[in-house]
Length: 219
Image 1 (tube, rainbow, N blue to C red):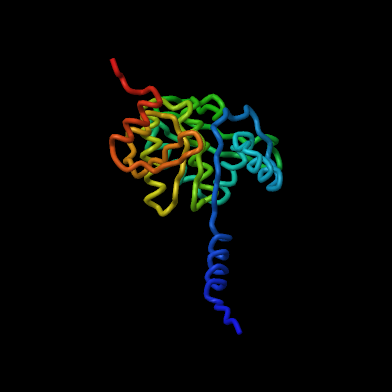
Image 2: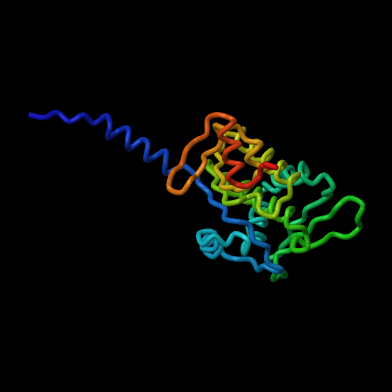
């Protein structure tokens, strides 16, 4: 006669229930926004996200942020990084408009500009933190989030990602950026070498990683 304990099964079931409620979001490498974007149905937006084409529906996502009254979360991030930003406007009238209008205005300028004309750094922060504000994920997976960002903006990116982590979220990102790597503690870095992955433990290992990236001056 065998006695089967249900403890492990019960624990597995509870774990699966928790996992099903876990929100994981992946953002691919940033691509420039489209010049114009029509309002899309939720099914079309989801299809674009599944295919990794976030840039093709970014104005739709921003409009959804406004409709959910979350745009202030994004604006706060943008104001931290771009203190000269005076306003970010998201407008669409389903009865009269074909395209979603997203404009920004800088201090000292009388005219607002379309988001398409903004620099790639500004667009990238809108892309990343707009998505986070809308989806409110528990885990965020980022592919080369530092692409198109110079040193100052890379440091600002890391600062904002740390803030996201402080709110209880987990962030994992792939990068080749010496600026970002040099600002991380060893325990925060997992180095990939061919088929092997290893979490770093001491500072000298960080220098080895940077050396492998060709970032150290050995002259």
